[in-house]
Image 1 (cartoon, rainbow, N blue to C red):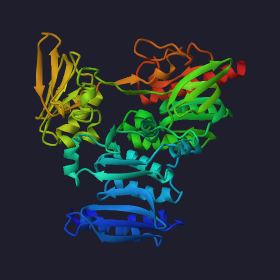
Image 2 (tube, one colour; image 1 turned 90 degrees about the horizontal axis):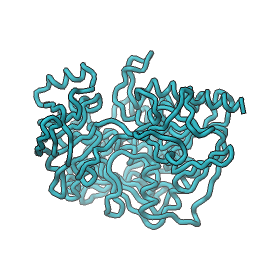
Image 3 (cartoon, helix red, strand yellow; image 1 turned 180 degrees about the vertical axis):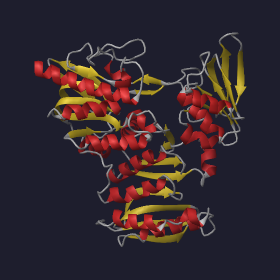
Image 4 (cartoon, rainbow, N blue to C red; image 1 turned 135 degrees about the vertical axis):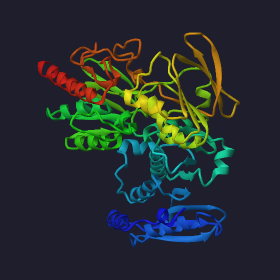
Length: 520
């Protein structure tokens, strides 16, 4: 690791002084590291740079067997530990850990979610194996660090899989982030605080004495925080209504989009930037953001809609706008579920580095599939694309780029029928030629599934009508068959799942809800 990679530049050092200017407590970065460890210098210099930014932060170094450090607040443990050098995306995780411990972080959840975290049962020890190049890992690390701060009986450590390679090999980890709860695998892949909290509640249970009930009332509740949900909330709030967004996260699936070039009037942006802009716009209005929540059902009682949220929370509204979008579609073939995280992956940006110099398959020939193949071609020795249809559906410019790559091969009319493995990891994929009916097994090391999206409508199927694809059926005004319940965006039957269309549909749903309210 070069000096340039270790040291923080002068601009960032000045930014850190501003970030930590108002710290109230005293913090110690308690370092334990072997004098012979190859990353000792990198860790010590990085943490000294952080400590130099505030007289409230100090470093303490002692000889150890490996490489790690804990965060102490006023000489007491916070439950947060890093085993690795928090460079790359994890540098933000370190900064947020200090800010959240001081009560100044921007990702601290509302009181209801905090109480759920505090109500988790037992002594809980969590470990997240991460990669410094993974864009999904920080969300998981930061969420679990936050839980450690809120629940004194919960600890969390981030482990850099590259430094602790022997551990990741022994645990047969092939995807990050991988979260272990007291030695048992709890979660693999991207997740937000709400998803992780639900898994921890299912795994450990909740202390009923600590759990607090909550009921909130609104004029309009928007379920979902993507482009459609954001537009619906903004339009509803502009009508002077009492509005809330209930969502697992603001931005939804858009946050995973790397480049966006078809949002009219914005020549280029990224999913991350767009999500930040959506949230900033929402916060210009009096909208309650109820994040980290998974809606389980909706009950219609007279004119009221009673929304039940995982964890026991109830939210009541006169009008509800469903804008839950869609999620990655799975192959639903034998072997797929068994090997998720052990050769079956959905995010080439996060898990691609695990397959450096190896042969992988991409299932799907749409934009996401061909983009994944192009990205993976720069990492892997060979990329094989399997498309079910007789032609690729990706944009022509992407097709041409993929076909010009020497280590990318593309097979059309190919149906995936099985994921094969040796019990520990993927060894191949079984594919059928739809024209000849001939089947073959292609030996490879990993499979990236990129076959589109499926509507997130399961929680509403008992309340509103859906089609055979699970999409919520709506009319031209975004009304469902249930009076007072509207739907917008990718979760509906509206054709063409595009960001700009979802935004328009969200606005339309809000205007329809307001019009119906005025008419009684």
